[in-house]
Length: 525
Image 1: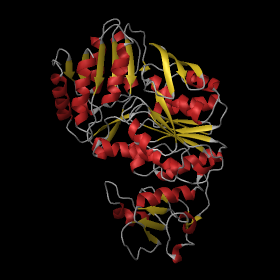
Image 2 (image 1 turned 90 degrees about the vertical axis):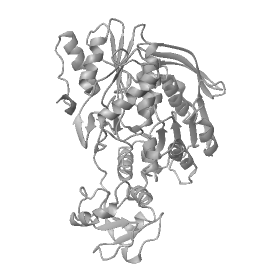
Image 3 (image 1 turned 180 degrees about the vertical axis):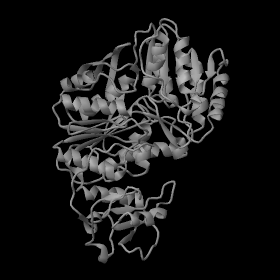
Image 4 (image 1 turned 135 degrees about the vertical axis):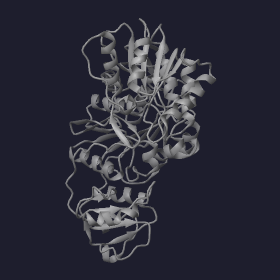
């Protein structure tokens, strides 16, 4: 995982431990008046005077206490009984919970001063977050956003395209505090299952929670679909928390009526529920849907009003993302439908989401982030409606992740694409040869014939080149799985990589025109 970009830091004077723990747990009297200048979980990055929290995820954070002390840690939090550290030590039952709650307290609970909208789901989170942001801008609201593609705070926009998830709890609170400091009133935050499971959003009080869908993904981390779904549900159960807001609005859960998660989330959500989708019982639904290679048009229907939508995003699954954002803003926030319509129209695209790459070739070329079985299925189904030619799909399956995805994704492509090229996608320390072998089994299981309808090409650059060379006039080449990301992991090393650059390089070579060089990967050797 890459480092979430640093957008600056709100200047906070030293904060006493008594304030940090005022809403959490008693601390030893001798430590109550002790003050710290910041909070850190990485012993390598700690600054003198900061509080070190020894979290225990894959590695026991207590091992790094000596290093933190060497770097000037002024106090330590952990779960083990420790003595004689030479600085105040506070033992807690759950260091992750402590980190989140004291981080919120350190920045004086910024989420209580904002209207906060959280977006979670397997696919479509980033697109929906960007739609929400654009709608609120069109409505004249002062809004910020943190997503896994971009961050917008007080006029600053940064690409966040490395392998990122929801930022650490301290960073989340820092970003929210920056928004408050910049005079913003609303914020959109993309909430991943990893971030929710690690309690990084505990202490952030959400007003609206939006779900796109919950499908097969991250089972390597969560263990089962039920646990994965339960992690997502934390965003919704947390809506019922009774913390005081400066400008409260009725809290609401925005649920996808078409998704298998609907019944479960409807049961666990105790606040107002607003459903959206194509289902006839959805409160906000779509009709008269048309789509082209340039975008979507449809009418959004609600119990009290209807409004037209024109969207620049490609793929009919984006109807659902538009409905989610529209339901949250028009019904949840009560914004004028003109702002909803204008905001959706203003979003010209999201980096790496069905992003067209055009160097003048006589076939279409698109980069998309589809990296889950459901995401791949939706991208291929949408692509079939965009071309009368063949679909040529290039993708892989990440190492150290759910092995079942390898077979599932290859099966889906064998059924829905005309040609499939299986290649590298962050193999990490797993064997790339074994990953591709597992995928080949899936392709063959659904009628794929190697070297005729599917190929194994380990180097992703060569795989994209091969796809481009196979393309005939009117075909559609899809580079899938990386989208906006700016690196690929082999072993424990992140190599600079951008599918958009790679596809442009392949197209330039194919057309004999000037273009970027193909990025380097170790599989080229």
